[in-house]
Image (tube, rainbow, N blue to C red; front, top):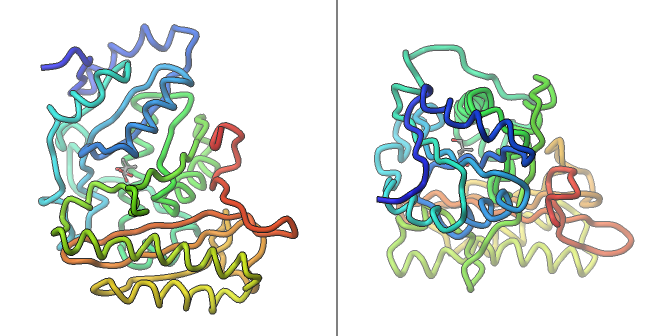
Length: 298
Ligand code: PAF
């Protein structure tokens, strides 16, 4: 048992009212649980900015049939124990029935940023993400919501929704937290055997290869994509290795300006993604944020 204020129902959310009256902003960190150091970095930043509320909900509508909804790791007690020392104001961990009273209800349709990349590979995924994120924003009404940059397309698809549907919230994306060998932290890394885990570093290796090529002056998106694909040969299969423009995710003619280098590959049962967001201009190549907010990299 922990001392974290655990909210399980919509009715429990009235316990957030005193926080709303406080001067510090409510800061939402939406998660699907199975928390790792990447999530905890988001919560620490939320604590610096205001009163963090963490949601933990494995959202069925963002998983297609045959994906890992049933297998997705769930351990609420462990998650609460990790959050307790971080000073979270509350954790909202509803049951599926609490969030979706019926099947086949209204879903939020994603905008153009959902085209291609994960949106192309996972039909319906971003409609599920946007639907749950909008519901969480309505229910919790945070002033700020923080997301991990590893899910880069998700960040941009959510930013498009917030802009186009006039949702009153400020969004931040924070840098990906990595294992010492470069592998991006992900709850799905738990699906890997020790041998698979060693091969999984090929995703961050692919991004490093593209960055090195950019630093050497390469500006042809196809050649950067080829450099990433070569490093991904260690994966069981490759879903994509692409260069896109930020924030609209258009395919650029030349690799200049703010770019997303994005990879997705399968290793054993795990579908892993990783990316690098870079500003490429006369001053060189430097890592940057997805969403235009000074706080994002502070
Ligand atoms: O990034 C995630 O964990 C999920 O997609 C999110 C944003 C919590 C929505 O279910």
